[in-house]
Length: 238
Image (cartoon, rainbow, N blue to C red):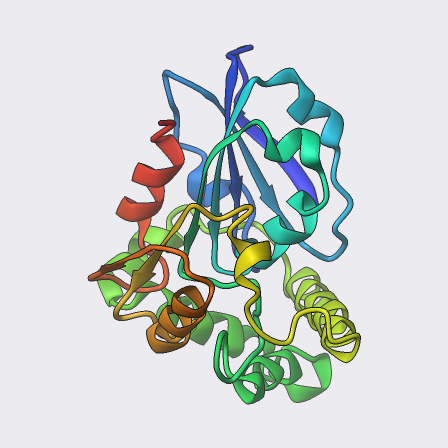
């Protein structure tokens, strides 16, 4: 996992953002807060994390988007010293179950995307383009996103998604993460935002997860990539 500071000015509060699959810092490089340092995490090919950085902050605001919700769970669960400093944790358009017919991305769609990213498929570039268009929801948002698109090659995107699937599949086989566990989830997530026009993580699946996890959520009008909502949550350190 890559940890990148957008803003680091020695403030006492950290806004810690876990981005989605295929991202880097470029789409978020113009985010800046006068109240907190801002770190973005991305590339979940491995989930290694430098916890020492977090010890510098007395208050931490967590925002996680899409696959970042799953990654944040892995980073934060079991680290009581960090959990005690979290003031708020908001999940946006994602759940901790990334490939699940009831609570995440339908498994056949997840695996179909992974298969089409293979070199043998000859469809990798088209698959990334199609994913980003669905993620953005409309042509205008897609154009804006592409003006500051992640600078990652297709091989790295394929490796990341394959690693996520392998780790998640192993979790399911161990029966650790088959369905929501409200007592576990509520230790991190204080709320969620679900966008009704999400074409990546179906809104109904997200709502089902948060309902069963007894976590309050807001239903918003937007697509999977909802920059206004993300910017507001990332920069709001309450």
